[in-house]
Image (cartoon, rainbow, N blue to C red; front, side, top):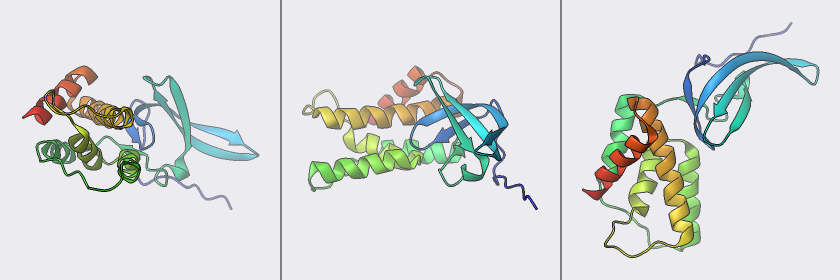
Length: 168
């Protein structure tokens, strides 16, 4: 007897989704494919910016953290985090960097906003190290892409909105 396993969340072609390790992508297809003698239902996600296509088995979609774009309420929570005061822990940079990477790869917009807030440097503050800048830009890019899709604006407009919130 062959049971059909499907995700609790319905993923449809044309939907925007967030894959924690890569950010925002668009579902191009939900197809059946035979792999190693087993027929799998795969979600095909395209990441245009990275020129990458990912095929995720429907049964594993929830386990890998694939999710729909955040609701407006969640995005508002993330944006309100940006208005807060930076909380930089006094631990070694390597450990902080690891925590920041984990937050970014969690795919949670509120956690990503915390990274952006903590690593943001205004014009008049000290320069960032190369690795700080890389992590900051990755977090800002992930958050801006989700805000852009959520609010139906361009990625550049979303980035500007985030930077405006940070500079206040």
